[in-house]
Length: 194
Image (cartoon, rainbow, N blue to C red):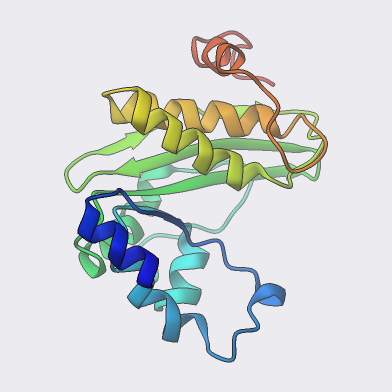
């Protein structure tokens, strides 16, 4: 919290990934007792509907976002809007969207809400997943890179989705792809299948 406050005072952009892991949450307090104060100082928030529920008690309004083989980014807009309302400092709220066809075959995309517009990335079919570990981290790293590199939220989101998509094809938790490889996938090379 001290680091977030210092970053806020210095004008440094603060991002957070709300990824909740029950087995790792051994702090003596529940997420809802800790996370709101931390996230209040964040400019960029990444989290899905499950994270929003665990940390803040938020639920999608009027839609079923049950994970299946396909995903609809607009179904998550209510959660993104609720997060931004709860944390008005946030300039961008993002979620990844995974459709599970099987353990080794998923669809993968994401959406970004900037308070006015919902940006949706193309969806990829990852047909031979090697390792899902690090998929979310590589998304957030790709998003940070994209937001710093491109003056375009759509392109930044597309970079994040493509980078994390490629990470699914690499063993281990580090994304070893190059910027050129990510941009090649973004340009349509692979016809949506990886």
